Image (cartoon, rainbow, N blue to C red; front, side):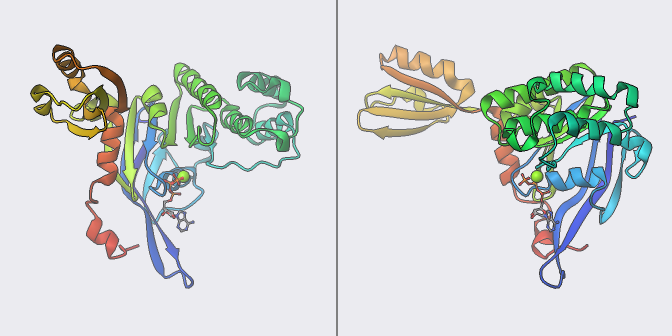
Length: 318
Ligand SMILES: Nc1ncnc2c1ncn2[C@@H]1O[C@H](COP(=O)(O)OP(=O)(O)OP(=O)(O)O)[C@@H](O)[C@H]1O
Ligand SMILES: [Mg+2]
């Protein structure tokens, strides 16, 4: 039994003054996420990531299609008790302290009274907010708010955790902390479904990813599988204006400016290119990775023409 099974979920909003113009936020989506997987949902702004999560959480209703979480329907309260959710921009009543907020959520999610204060204290410690337990949320930094948001999502020990952009707006330290929390969830065997456009985070954490753009699924699979036909790019700069013939045959682009040459080439050709420069006694100035193969794959998928382009351009049907 998969943890999440999406069966043609689709969402068309009605927009405009008379709400007559259809806006297709999500085209019929089919997707399965297995138990224990960390699954990254990747896509640019407006791709349909939050719409998918809101549909799964039952916060908006699908135009058509359905989905199951832990083999139960989306409106099944037994299922809701076994999942956790961090919304994209969580809003909490900010005169509460971290401890009060978590206590409130613990009550909501049915954590028994006897266990509540211990559970809240453990959770505050786990997300690094022990010292801020009695500080009001309005004094929290963005990173602290994000961590308290994650704490409310995992407080009741859910089996499946949904996180909408858990790293957005965080500084490098904050991102690392959230990443570590997600790694812990993975080690505990939880299923984690999260959306992001930070590809390095997806690369570090995910068993599988899906790429979505303009409401349409463009690719899904393990990162190594998806990127097997795509290569990252590197930039090599050397002194002089000479471009060795061997390099010209390497599927590279060259830019000569002043007294240096800049070449952009596939990462696989790095060794051969460096050997050529050495052989020709050219002075290397720098070598910089420009993009990983996941970035290249993502760009290809996001830029590729939509299979539904004509239907989308025609406004689609609800
Ligand atoms: N309530 C709504 N009414 C009308 N259109 C909406 C509504 N919510 C979302 N949309 C539209 O649906 C599309 C998908 O939005 P969604 O919020 O799912 O994107 P996203 O992938 O989460 O983007 P981001 O990375 O910016 O969070 C967008 O074009 C958006 O404008
Ligand atoms: Mg979003």
